[in-house]
Length: 456
Image (cartoon, rainbow, N blue to C red; front, side, top):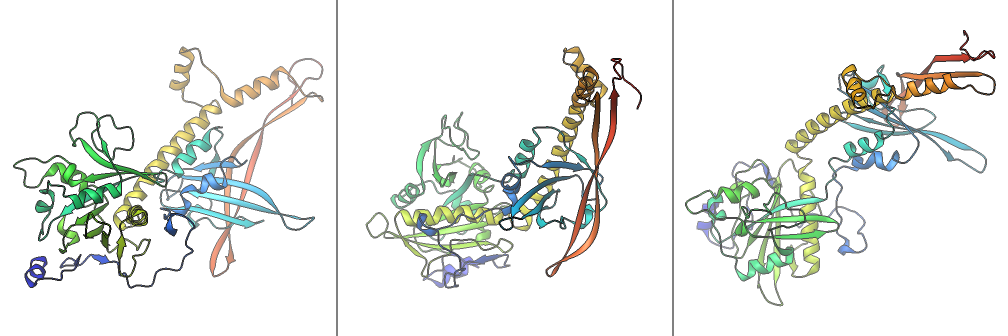
């Protein structure tokens, strides 16, 4: 189809859809979404990959709260964080609030309510949660919760000459024209890869196997490494130029630079990872009147992303265009993570990380309680570090001394039972959960003035 468009002659569209669909093209004439423009940075907003990604840090970290874990669930392993706090209602009254955060391999539910603990998920009904008693558990939990928070990005940059219609032709380009060089300078700094200390985006910084130079920049505390096709190694006799495709084909978003008006088709490059393309066509390059025409295309399951294109989508060379382009690239990748392929991959990753976190918290909690396995305790004893854990320490303290009345009582928290009853919240149905902690008398001591433990 692209050959037919070229045969008909110009003017040519900047991008055309594949014959069998599967992509969308951003319409610059579409009304932009209503959102408040931020001061500074020309009002261009960086989007969040997931609003809940920092939930634990925002609501729990550094505040007194309880963590519980559960493995007997058809959802897999679960982790529950519980926080109680008071908010001032008027001059004399306070309202008690309960905040729960439930982590599972497929969902993170965060709920706030007054007096009652609202619905987290139906599958959590009747489960038994064990307390996490490891004192540094919050650090492990926040690392898990923020595993998808990213401040490094890598993007492909492809140079397309007039009439090029295949990936073999695209990756065969070696010359960097003055117009392309000017565009690369707008994107970032040309850096030497040897011993480069910043984010390298998978490029070799020790042996020169991925070329000697690349383009790098930092945009709003986000490190960006560009995989520039003409700077990656060229292999004589390799029609596919696998060294170049290995990097650009594994990027999620790519820039396509066009020095002349020529059509681009997004399925021109065969890749399971490339989900979005931003096309930039230069007009009057290397002059005071240089402008760039921009088009955007992405796979059909990628949601729209900002900032929206101008109408017409032509930008003057300068810092505002750079701000727009870098923001658009980052938002494009964040939007691609919401596509079906990457959403499924993230779900599997999250489940695997939660399983690992659950096992680690269980092991560390058992160790704190002196309930580690025989082999582990034996190994610690051989190294002179045998210890019975928290419970054993408390027992020793109770046996060595008593309070002012000669009595001491030890209570051990065993489990948390979650019961469910339906309530209504607006148009949706919610479920209240009543957390009940069952302390068990574990030790009672009475001196009776004899210095020996008494009965009872």
